[in-house]
Amino acid sequence: MKILLMEDDAVLSDILLDFLQESFHVEYAYNSQEVHKHLETKKYDLFIFDINVTGQNGLELLEELRSFSDNTPTIFITAYTDTNYLQKAFDIGAHDYIKKPFELEELHARILNTKRLFNIETNQEITIDEGIVFYANSKKIIKNKKEFTLATKDTLLLNYFLNNKKRLISSEELMQNIWDFETLPSDATLRSHIRTLREIIGKEKIQTIRGEGYLYE
Image (cartoon, rainbow, N blue to C red; front, side):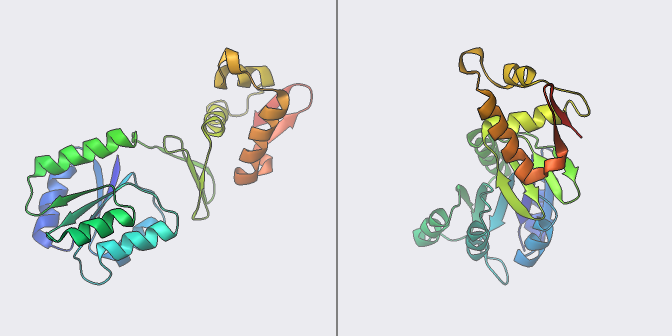
């Protein structure tokens, strides 16, 4: 599980990093500018943002990220007791919050709860091509910094192709391994799913071998 932590209190950030890195992969940002630098090249499973940081605050940062269709689950850390701040956090798309001072184990519990709610697993990055990265568990493709959310069947199909590179795969094999017997699709439906993948990752990646099936290069 990859977490991006934004906290400008040097002492607290050191404590949080030492604690959280025992269980998770955690990267650190001092302010919103550093968050944006991380997001230029990486994808995270969870954001933990302090609200009151120097410069653009955590609320403003999340509101901006949500406007870019970044729906990464987010937990806010806050010293505020005013419920207006908390309401604002939820209105712009936060999923949880924790008030300072707090026990480290409480934060850990909230992270695990978020992981359970969003079914977050270790989300291995699979590089498809230059500038194209596939995240199977979150059903997403990042292509030249643009995010595409895949349907479940599209995700399963792409994963199957990636696990069977350079091997001729028949339509029947794909149907039997991706769909239940009771819901086997038509050839037209299968072609539609493959067309969707080609539009994102490139037509040349999935070749049609006429009369035989498909080959992933």
